[in-house]
Amino acid sequence: MVFRRRNGRVEVALVLVESRKGRVWCLPKGLVEAGESPESAAVREVREETGLDGKVLEKIDDVRYFYCLKEGNRTVRVLKTVSFFLMEYTGGDTRDHDREVVDSRWFALDDALESVAYGDERKILERAKQLLEDRRKGA
Image (cartoon, rainbow, N blue to C red; front, side, top):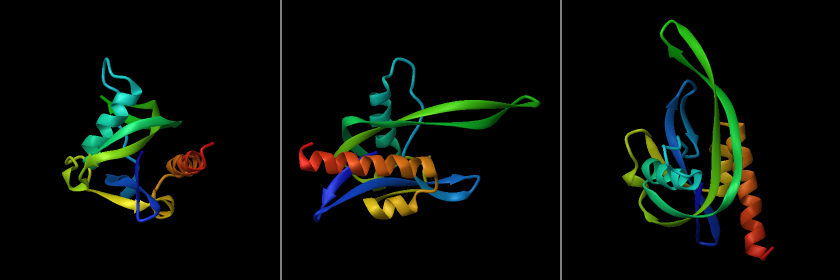
C-alpha cells in the first residue's frame, strides 16, 4: 500500500479492476515471483498496477483467502496469502499503470476506507492508518 502526504492529509493509491463483482476499487497486489522477496514483489506490483514507486517502511499484515480456478474438468480451490507493506511514495504517475487495471488514483485515506470493495483490505487500510498515526507521534 503506497501513501503520500499532501495538503496536510494522507492519500493512498487504489486501483480499479474488473472482478466477478464488476469494477471494484482495491489495493494493488500480485504474486511473488521465483527468487523474489515479498517486499520486492510488493514494490514491483505497486509500480506495475499504479505507476508509482515507493519505499517499504514496514509490513502491515497478511490477508488470506481462497479462490477457485479451472483445471481441465475440475475446479481447484487455492489458498492465496497476500502480504501488504506500508510504502512511502517516492515518484511516478498514476497514469502510468499497466493494462491489468482499469484505472489508478490517489484517494484521501478515509475515502479509500469507504471505497475499497473488500473487507480484508479495509482492515489493512485501518491498520495502515494506525501505523501512520503512530509514526507521526513518534511512537
